Structures are given as C-alpha cells and as structure tokens.
Length: 282
Image 1 (spheres, rainbow, N blue to C red):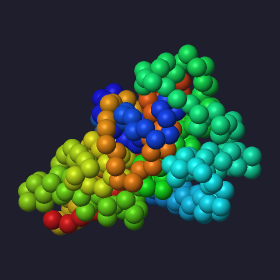
Image 2: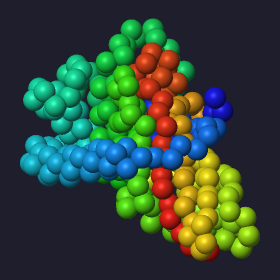
Image 3: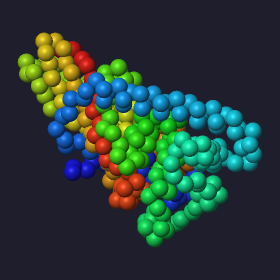
Image 4: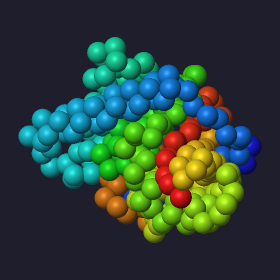
C-alpha cells in the first residue's frame, strides 16, 4: 500500500508538556474509486455530526473546569481536561477502554523520541485511549483531522463517505489545491479525469492539511455538471516534522508523539477508506 506522509498529529506521550516534537502520519490513496451509496453517506454524516456535538460538549467541560486550573499552565490544563473528559466517558459507559492516570501521563518525560514504546508494555486498549484523548484535545482546533483519527480507533471502522452536503466540501472547493486539480478538467472536453490534489498548509487550511494531505480525485462530467470523489485510505506512517502552529495545543502534540506506526502495528489504529463527494460545474 502506497504510504504518504501526514494526517493528524501522530504522536503520544514521549515528550514534556511544553515541547513540540515531530512525527506525523499519513492517509494514503491508491485504491480504485468507490461510489458511495446514500445509506453510507447518511451514516457517515450522522457519525460526524455526533462527533461535532461531542467537541462542543468537551469545550463546555473545559469551561466548567476553569475554576480548578490553579497554577497549571494553559497547555497542561487542557491536557488534564482531555484526560478527565475521557475518563468520564469511560465511567459513563460511553467509551470502552481503561481509565487514564492523569499524574502518570502528565509526568512522562524523555530525552529521546526514539524510546521503544514496546518496551513499556503498553496494551492496544491503552494506546487507543491515549490517542482518543489526544484527538479530543486537538479537535478544538482541527475537528475533521481529529474525527478521522478517532474513527480509526476501533476494530472494524466503517468506510467514511462524506456527502456533497458535508461542511468539508466547501472547504475543499475553496482551496488552491482543489482549484489547481480541477482546472484542467473544466477546460477540457473529457468526461473523466484522475488527479492528485495535495493539501498543504499554504494552499488549504490546517484541518484539511492534517486530515487529508495527499489524495486521489476521480472526476466525472455530464454536460456542465461535474462530480468528483476525493479519496484516501486512512493509515499511518511516522514522519519527522516541525512547526505545527495554527493554535494547535502543545499538549495535543505531546500526547500523540511517535505512536502512529506502532499503534497500527498492534491494531489500535485500523485503516479505512474515505471518499468525499465534491460537486462542481464546467
């Protein structure tokens, strides 16, 4: 399977709270196009809507906890809230998996990003819990990238088919990456085209950059109408990176460092297919 390089902050628990380390993982996209059914699109839209409601609930949880911040830095406070929010959902039966030890995670430090995670004896369920917490924390700034990561943290994640009505579609169409990829098709007489939009921090927003990056787009036309499918297979391969920026909490980077490939190797992260329907006109 062709590996590409980037998708959400791929990293978990190897650096101090305030450090910015470097390793992202990437969705890949070398599969043939899949035309999504209405049922699959509706299911994906419902899942994403449920996730957005959870993000809002998490924001409210943070506000409710402000009085307890004390001397904690904003970064450490956000991480603490994410862990407590995860534990609350586990206790309520909304999530499977272990409760996380706040003090243990917040005190983890290392002088090297190459520490062997396997030697720590971390279980699949704990890996998932840590990545889920990191995604929840990052969701405040990059909700779509966080949703795609959280969706992979189950044994049999469904393929995601985001319909033309999804909020990600106008974001995609507004990027220079999409415009550059679709422009030749709009001016041609062909009825189909395969292109490879690359979403970067400079030609799109950070959420799309971290969620998609390298993609394959299948475009078809009928008269002046164009239907494109931006596709990817969501999986991970770590890559050294630097300078996340865009307001992404340092705590999110801290909680996700260097876990991508390992998480997938133990089955904590499970790849799945993504297809996004993008309508346009010639």
